[in-house]
Length: 591
Image (cartoon, rainbow, N blue to C red; front, side, top):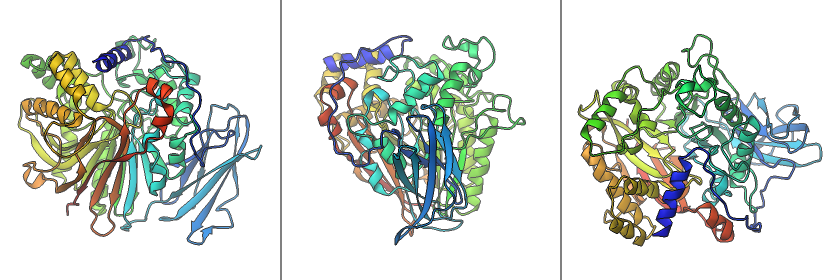
């Protein structure tokens, strides 16, 4: 049982400030064919993001000071156009860890573009993307979503197949770095702006002959949001700075502190995005702060809503550590329904509701809400850090979706290091009945973050004394594989059974979309491969909308999870792992 006990020690270490994990000596680089590696002068490659039907932000980081020149051309079936869309756009690099961006305008909807960044020594890197379809068009759509990228687990073979999937866009759902986990770039909690930039550079750099993240970013449009590990585990930007010993300031909010701003600034400059801010008329905790929220449409196929769930949230409630203590659970539920508590901030909540209604009124079929933390009910062990810990606002949003008849809402989330799919319900208050809503959620990822969801949940139950040594031995005896059989014959099935047992105690739905008695709120879904939970892999999920039927097919790819010392000692085998389908299901669009 050494592997389980070691994982417990790792989990415990990561929860202690100042704890440093000893890493084995770095293994020699492994030669892996990678024809699309960025050149030395542009080590993170290029990216395009914040794209609309008419504009895009182009991004690059040069390794040395000097001028970066961006060009962009329209691609047709005959190839790349001879003439650039506009005159070359240049930016001057003064600090090598400070990327540069340019905004190009005058683009056409539903068009293909190729762009290139070049530096003075001749090094260049190219990328391409599709602009979204125009108003009312149904062309179909294919995009990817994942999250949770630890620098000490680079490179990232779990997403190696994504660049070849001809994606319309890619969403990174947060924990784009782990600033609080030691890694080769910064072997401690990042503190300075330079250390946060080094962490961001690390995940986008070539390691062991592989740079899958740079390849993915160059192959499509990127959207991103942050979660907690861009700054600090479980950080709450709207909490008082003096509520946590990690922040030196004794007044103001956490989102005003030096540490928070350093992490957020590094996140923003390493994304291809325009930096927007909330106006002076916004809520006090939001006024003048960066505005990460985005609303983008892709013809009549889909709308995308990207949320910021860290910058403005209130301080989390105390964690429930005894699931058998009814009084503790009741106090948590009562506190979570405090209407004064927020996870989004008043202005962002209003924006989301307004834009969901707009998408419905414009006849857009699918509405994808990108939420870094889960909306679905899981058990209570980590509820304070999810929507579940802000139950009044959770109910307000789901009730709004139900009462306004907003169809085909999908919450795409991450943070829990695994794929978990479920229907959504809400309560009007503590202890009230669960009300089904015609919306559902898929938690996706991780690219690489240990421990994966299945192992993490097993360890949690083990640490809480809910499992025995015999249970531990049984778990370790099970194979790590994925099927749709409900018999607990693999680790996913076993852990899913443990979690569903706990959720049944609280009246929550078991994992999955099929066979849920939800009346008019039922989801018409069919499981094609695997299961509605994949909890022991690193990977990503693909979402594909059929242009004619508007049916949505969700395919999750994965590789067996690994830890840093495995990569150090058996890198060649791990880098060679190719993502395979571990889950696939289809959901019919509602009228």
